[in-house]
Image 1 (cartoon, rainbow, N blue to C red):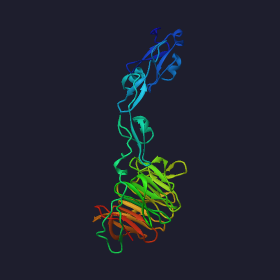
Image 2 (image 1 turned 90 degrees about the vertical axis):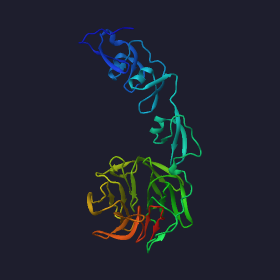
Image 3 (image 1 turned 180 degrees about the horizontal axis):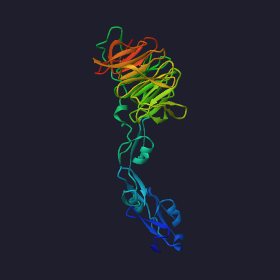
Image 4 (image 1 turned 180 degrees about the vertical axis):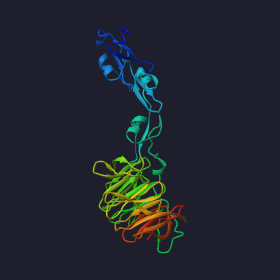
Length: 374
């Protein structure tokens, strides 16, 4: 093996020793050698010295070899197959030549499928990793998608002019064609039909319905799915909340700061600002509430702050807009509707509001109370 001669005016070589990168000059004659080169991501290949330097790699010497790989566990819990030298470069713990990274059950919650994956591969797939050495089980899914039957609610405390429903809800949405979907307290997803509630597979916690009656949902992993009529299709991106207008335009609030964004057919086009809850009115205008309970409307390219304060908001296909205000009572927060210049109370309390056509509205209530409608 040739050793570099220390001449400060000559080209520098890099040597990876115990994860550290040391700089040494090499003579012009010594620059033609080849050997093992460890790049900053820990991967090792045998390359010419100059190529290694150009790639920012750690050159371990002429005629050196990378060695056999093994499992390298990193500080974040992920594991990849690297050589011992590469593992040192990324600050990992090398388990030995020929060892393999552990796998575990990797769940795709909305379609209730499972496969064995490494932690890193499962995370890159956007799925839920159950832990090293766990196995897929046909009867195990995260708790919020396990129940198959929605809890039956007992009618009680039903305000005048409203009717109690047979179910409880943490979110409700109504499409422009009148189709109602809801998510129960266990994150199960249901479509309301004249003959009863039909459960869709999987689980979610936020929901919106498009003009033809198909639901879009956001699950606890902030993944977005669209119902095709028979199954769920995963969409690009992630979200905190979702809303759909009468014209079919889909809006979400992005996880990073609640920035609103609209679906452009292949991805999401961002606006400015940030919110916690989002809805779209009959004219296609965006409404949202933020972390300070302020109410904002986006119309004609500008945000306008509306009067009042609210926890939740919903706009119907006929122009009605409802909010849950800050006053609390049995079942949640007081429901208001927009009266043109201000908010008018409706005398009922809930933890979620969904505007329907005309004067129809649906209110989900806390404390085990059934949802109500008018």
